[in-house]
Structures are given as structure tokens and as C-alpha cells.
Length: 428
Image (cartoon, one colour):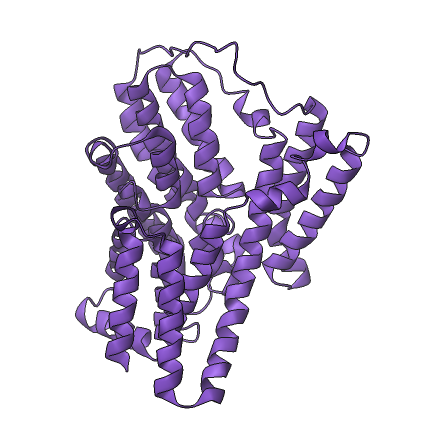
């Protein structure tokens, strides 16, 4: 049975990894793989009660992640519908290309920790299009935005899907991950930014010509933008505090905040016509969230859970411990592999490989995994959601990214990893 399960998972995983060449959406591959794996597991095990119990446990964990992501993505869509991100991006102005690089990357780093790396990458790459005329310069900025977004998402429990998975699963706590990974993630960013900004010194910012026929904004007032931006961000920032105070799962905090945002939005636009408020309300935002990604997360989490319950992943963990030996090297390898394949199934597999009984909350394994899986994806343009988004927005060539950005990402990745290990060695 195990051989067949592994074979099906490998085929599904390969289809996910080569989504673009084979032109099959990764969500379809994930769902098909999950369905086949659970079907084979149920038939060959022959114990329906045992399988139902395992499936029920998996559904509880999967549902928490999915509800959280849906709520957070809807909040971000509402902010974007009100042009809320202009509150930040409108204040980024400088005449020096080197200074602009620092500003854009630092803003991306912190914004990604509050929102998520995918949304932040989209917002900041779109901003750079408005600030720079040269396509070569925009490509360079887009590549650095990918690094900054992934670094920012790694040290926050809500900044990256994989970190959120570890947080919801109990492997890390919000305060510990922020305290443990903020400095390594910052090093991960500062090393490549320092290198690239040095090469840009003395170059001026050349802004693109403004198109007089271009549509201006969404018709929201400055007051409305500010209210929805700060309220939306406040809701997301408050989720870790909500979990700490109530001991309820994070998705409950997001849903509560979404309800507050919905109420405020309806009150704010109560005097507008239906046409004016149509694109601003929560109903419209729900229609715009990336449901294909949500379905992918469901499929891949269900698929990986089959390998965990069948004993394949614990056996793999034992093999790695015997063959590689060093835990830090194992996690570093996972981070590098996440540059080639999606980091969500990698982290899901790692969670299945190592139990909380063996490695307690906030142990070295989980914190280092959050860093490596979150930042390792920057090494290749296809290694993270932020990279794929930037690739689509600016039509970034895979080979160009390898030549111009991958070396910088590798330098930052290992510098941040070294910073974390030194930090752990000195301070525990």
C-alpha cells in the first residue's frame, strides 16, 4: 500500500511543480491526488472507523487554515477596493534609485508581515510600475520585492501560509516566532539590498510619463481609505492577541474582524447608491479572492495527511535523521528544495514527519523551518507565491531571475540562517 501511495503522491507533486509547462492547474492535481490517496488508504486499510477518525482529525486542521486564509484574503481585498494601500505607497518618494530601493524593500518587509507576502508583492510591484520608467530597473526592483516579501512573511504568524500553518498547528507561538526570526529575516533582506543598492548608487529615479486617459482611483475619499486601511490592518494585527486572550483558534479572530469590517463598510457607504457601493462591499470582495489557491491548499493538505496517517512521513523523518544526522542541515535542505517546489506541501510534510511530542512548541526545528521554508522560495522565481505573482505582473524571465536575483537570494538565505543559529547559540 505504501509504495502505491508514494507513487501517486510523487506523480501529483510533479504535476504541481510543472504546472505551467503541462498547462494543468495545480489545484486540479492536488484535488485528484488527495482523492486517490484517501480512496486507496480507505480500501486497503479496510477499517472504515479508523480511516474516518483520521479524516476527521485532518479536516479540523485543514478547515482552520482555510477559514483563516479566506477571512484574511477578504480583508485585504476590501482594503484594496478602497485604494487603502495608497496610504502607504503614496508616501514613497525619492530622487535616488538607491534610496528608493531601500524604501521599497523596507516597506515591503514590514507590510508583508502584517498582510501576507503574496498580496504585498502584488501591491509593491504595481507601485514600482508607477515610479520607474525603465523596464530593466522595474525588473530589478520586482526581484528584490520578492526577497523582501518572503523575508517579511517569515517572521510573522500571519505573513506566510507556511508560518500560519505552523502557528495554527501549535508548533510555534506568535510572540516566539516574532522574537526568534525578526533579526534573521532582517539579515536575509539587508544582505542582498546592501549589495544591489551599492550597484545603483548615483543613479536618478526616472518616472514614467502619466497617461491622461488612465482611470484615477475607485472614487473613495481620503477619509474612507484611511478608515478601511487602518481598520483592516488593525484587525489582522489583533488576531495573535485574540488567540492569546481567548485561546480560540486564529480563524475565529479573523472572522470576528471581518464582521467588524463588514459592519463599518456598510455604515460608511450607507448613503451611496447601489452602483457606487457595489465594488466596495464585502460581497464583492468575496467574489475576488483567489479561490483556486484555497482549493489547492485543501487538496495538498489532505494529500499530505494520508502519508502522515499511513506512517510514511514518520519513517522518512527517521531516515533523514539517520542519513543526514544534523537537524539544521535537514531544515536547510528543505528550504532550498522549496525554491523548486511549493513550500506549502513541504511544510505540511515536515509537520507530519516530526511530532509535537518529540519536538515541542517553539523548538529549534519549528522556528528554523519557518525561516527556511519562508525565505528559501526566493532563490527561484517559481519558488514562492510572491515570485509567481511578480513573474506574471512584470513578465519576468526565469533565466533572467537566476542570473540577476538568485545569487542575492542565496546570500541572504544563508546569512539569515547563520544569524539565527548564532542567535540561538548565544541566547538560547
